[in-house]
Image (cartoon, rainbow, N blue to C red; front, side):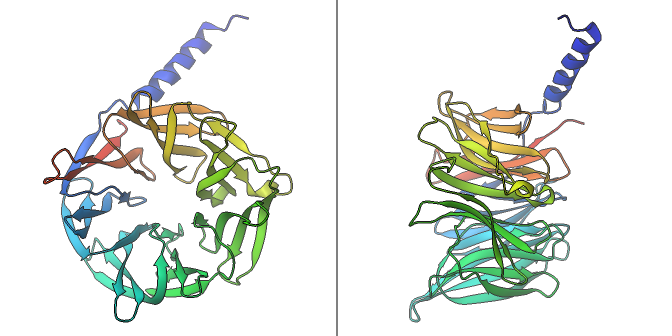
Length: 362
């Protein structure tokens, strides 16, 4: 069957437009002294934040993505996580210190407002054996953010930050919760995945922060589990779906599995295969939509790639390919802009990090 000439031309134009959108080369936003491997950007603004290690200290810096202005707002021996409160130019960050005499950890929660330059203590958690240094995650309306900790009874606890009252409230889960979790967009539920150590069964569960009730969204028995291991659980709760990276001995590559919460009685796992030579380092949902953006390591070509994947159509766009080491990317929602860091450690006495911006052309 021959396709009409106009159809072919339309297709070629669409391909060219898709490729030319990211024809611009990455630009350097700023340069930091030390190693800053995790860079976070505001959801709908131009500010970034990074913990960077300089010698034996960690410095928390916020950066204006437009002009490269840097503000050093805190220094800590042991950094924690950070997240921007959606809809606001406010950074929530955590750090910890160990009290040797009392044999306990203190975890401190602070906020920094880039507009007012106010750095405020909002809470402190004590008697903790361990703090997960995963970044806090925030509801899209900015009302809540949370981070998971382990208390002295070895029970998971979600420390819930309420932005309206600048308060941190512990929510003890009283259940076996895996460390990979995500917060619903409205801030009322926590989703996570876990394995039963005794049976090997795999679950995706939902926990209400308001009333403390649990429900299993999916249960895969050990013999029907689609993978041998799971990691990096990400929820796109507005459309009631989640994704996780999975590894199976029978397949040579990591895959992305998509779970539809509205079809929990008949779960279907949608796999999106990477190339056999690619290792997935990090992924997330783009702008809370149906597009996944991912950072992969091409082991064969020795390149790091930033790609966009449409999981339902399997369409894949490669936005960047570089030999520079990249550990994490962050996507600026509402703009076709990606931020990442490049570490230069060739001289161990002068380690430095460049904050990079990959931006679509207008």
